[in-house]
Length: 499
Ligand code: ADP
Ligand code: MG
Ligand code: ZN
Image 1 (cartoon, rainbow, N blue to C red):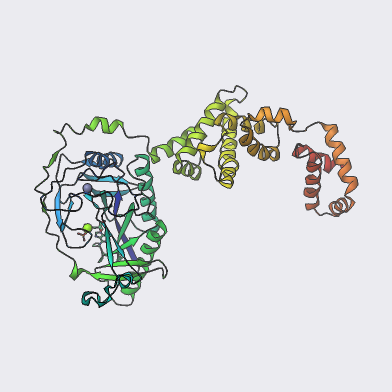
Image 2: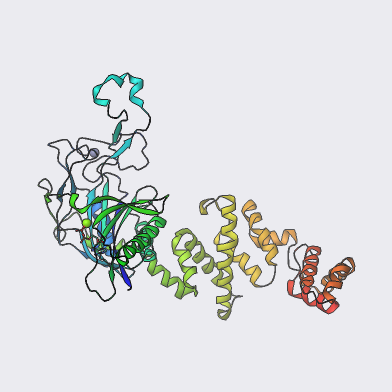
C-alpha cells in the first residue's frame, strides 16, 4: 500500500518595524539588556489602551500583494486567551475571523491567510542554583526546585505576522523551498530579515499521510520548534516515515503536537489534542476594526507601487535577458548585491562596440563565471563584501573583455583580481604597466618550448611512449617559462609538433 503525504505550514515572522505592535516601545531584536524596551502597554497592565502600528499593517498588506492575495476590505483584532508567564495580560491580541490577507499563492502552494498579532515575552530558565547565594535556600517555596525562571519582555508586543498555507505541500523538500522563497520575498520587501536561527521566522509543519485512493486527509500531527530550514525538511520527512510505518504496521496516528529533537533527528510527543486549549477568541474591544477602503492611513495604490521586483520575477527576467540557466538565476536572486553587480557589468560591456551581438552570450557567460567564482571566491577568502570592494562592475567588464579577446590568459586574470583590489586600478592599466599581455608570438613560444623539451627528457620520453598526461606536464612547464602569459592553445600546438 502506498501512502501519500500532505503538509501545511504555519509560519510566524517578526516584522522589523521601528516600534512595537500596540505601543511606542522600540522594536529592537538586538537589545540584550532584559526589560529595556517596555511600557505599561506591552507589559500588559490593566487599563492600558493598545494602538495598532500602521507600518505593521502595511507590511502584511505588502506581502499579500506580493502573493497575489485578496486584501481584506474590513479587518479586526481579536483576543486569544491563554495563561502563560510570558503573557501577563492573559490574552494575546491576534486576528481570528477577519485576517488582513486571504487566498494567496506561492510556488504552487495556496496561502490560506496572513494575519497580524503580537509576540510574547521570553522566558529564561536558570540552570545553576543562583538563589542559594542569596541565602534563599531556607525558603520553603524554593524547596522543590532551586532554579529560577526570569522573564524578559523586550520581545513582548513585537509585531508578529502569521501565514497559514493550505495543505498543498507533499514533501520536506517542497516545504523547505516554500519557506526559503517566503524568506527571500520578506527580505526583498524589507519587512523582516526572517532569520530562522534568530527566531525571526518560525515554521510549524502540519503533516499527515493517507492511503492512496483515499480522498480525505489522514490525522495530522503538528511539529514545532524547527529553527532551521534543514530541521524543517528533516522533521517533515521523519514524520512522513513515522506515520507511514505506524499505519503499515496496523497502528494509528494520534493528533498531537510534537517537538523536533535536533540531536536524535526525530520528533517526540509534546502534548495531545485532548489537552489543546480553548482560546475563547472574541473581538478586541479596545481597537476599532479597520476599513481598508475607507481609512486615510493606508493608500493601497501607494503600497502597490512600493512593491519592488520580486525574486521569481527577477529570476525569469535574468534567464530571459541574459540567457542564464535556472541554477545561475537562483544564485543571483539569493544575493541582490551580486545580481546588481552582474547586471551593471553586462551593461558596462554593452557600451563596448568590439563585442558583436552574436558573441554577447559567450561574453555574458564568461562575465558570470568570473564574477561568481573568481571574484566572489576572492571576496570570500578575504572576508570582504561588496561595500569594501574596490573593483567596480566596469573593472570586471574590462577584465572579462581582456580574457574574451585573448589579450590575457586566465592564469593572469586570477592574479589580476587581488591586484585590482589592492590598487583600485583598471585591469588594462595593470596589464600594460606590468607587461602581462598574453604571449602569442610564435617565435617566443617556440623558444620556450625548445627549452622545456631540452630540459625534460624524461617527460618527453614518456609522451613518446604513449603517456598522454606527460603533455600536460610539458604545457605547464612551458607556461611557467612564459610566466603564465603564454597562449595555452599555441603552446600545446607547438609542443605536439615538436614531439
Ligand atoms: P487547526 O484548526 O487544527 O489549527 P487548520 O485548519 O487551522 O487546523 O490548519 C492548520 C494547518 O494545518 C494549515 O497549514 C493546514 O494546511 C494544515 N492541515 C490541515 N489539515 C491537515 C492535514 N490533514 N494534513 C496536513 N496538514 C493539514
Ligand atoms: Mg491553527
Ligand atoms: Zn511598550
